Amino acid sequence: MDQSLSQGTQTQEQANWVQALHHFENIIATNNESLQVQSIIKLSHLANRAPVSILVSTVPILVELIDTSLRTTNNAVLKASVYCLKCLSCQGDGKLAVTIGQSSAVRHILCLLPHSEVGLQKVLLKCLRNLVAFDGPNRVNVVRTGGLKVIVDMLNSSSCPDSLRLLLLDVLSALALLREVRRSVFSLRAVRLLVESCEVGKMVSRARAAQAIGLLGLVKRARRDLVNSGAIEVLVDLLRNGDISTKIVAGNALGVISSHVDYIRPVADHGVIPLYAELLQEQEPLGKEIAEDVFCILAVTDDNAVTIVEHLVTIMRGNDNESVAAAADVVWDLSSYEHVLPVFHRFGVVSLLFELLRTNNDSNVREKVCGAIAQLSYNEVERIVIVNLEGVSVLINMLEDESEEVKDNAAQALVYIHEDPLLRDRTSDVLSHPVFLRVQERMVQTRSAELRLTESVRQMTVDELTWNPALA
Image (cartoon, rainbow, N blue to C red):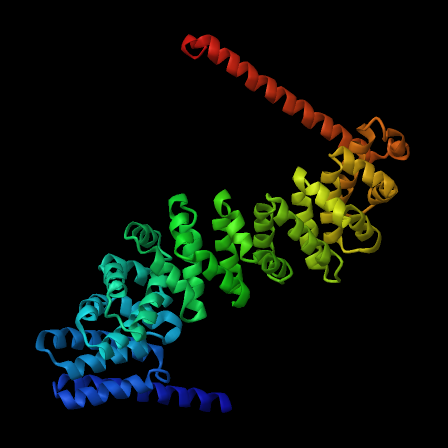
């Protein structure tokens, strides 16, 4: 009975809204300006309560009113209609933004925007901001209707008030997610405006701009303009003060910029290494992945390597296994950097890795740690350190681990130690172990394949020179 009463109430409410819609349509049809404005304002106030289906039905009416007002200079109805569209544009989880964007509203807004008084410009921009924030196709529509030029011209105007500037930058940050807009921003020499949009305004808008900067930074020619416009400073601020999703976006964009050798030091000089260390310890896997990638870029310089390793050691001495595993994964990556190995010695990294194998039972930690040790064992000096730490017995025990990856990495390290003439006797206890033998055979086959490939490439080069005397 309660359910039937509830359904009856909902049906009656829907009928009331339909009746209200018809009443609205009738008032608009009277062409009485005063009644029209009152009715439109009332609809604006009801926008957050009315059903989406009712609101969708009012959009064509409002757009037609704007079109008519443009031809008759009916400012009161025009302003009320634009204000109402602005109120509707943020309703229905983006559905109203899509509906408005599919109408001729965008064309009318862009036509009105440059020449209206500031109060109306503000309402127009808020409506436009909602349209491009909620819906990707709306961004395309705005750009292809000439919207980017309108926005950039207004931003470049010396008379642009601050109250409009933030809204304009908000719109620009959304449009810049389109590739064609980023190309235009670069060609229009408006990169500084994109950087400015990343510096001011609401965090969601700044994060969009940071994403666009990261995408634009993939273009080598654009990186210099971004850096000269202050992108590093702005992105560092977001990495330091943003929420986790913003930090991830800003961290990725900074990583893109730092991937050019000229900007590794400038990025590091802004104190980003501790910030990436914090990102490495966040729960978001993407944040950890970005921090790992950027550490691998920044660590190419000696000073950066020291600071990075210091932070990694601190993290690996902590109690959060996800963070410990992430830090060990970075150590694994950096183990192939010759200039980083002395830094590992300075901070006792190899000793810490074996300490983790002895005391930590987390499977992910053990996999990353064993991988790092396997990579380190490729180096003669590190093999001696491993042996002196009595690491061989620990690695032999790892051959019984549940994880196949741990077994394989431990066996790989033991193979490298066994192949060292000075250390071969330390591995006598493992020579018949099936995991050791399997990995040893695989490594032999891999080396043989690499040798054949090298010989094949060398022969191809000789044949090319012989066939084409001009190259000889």
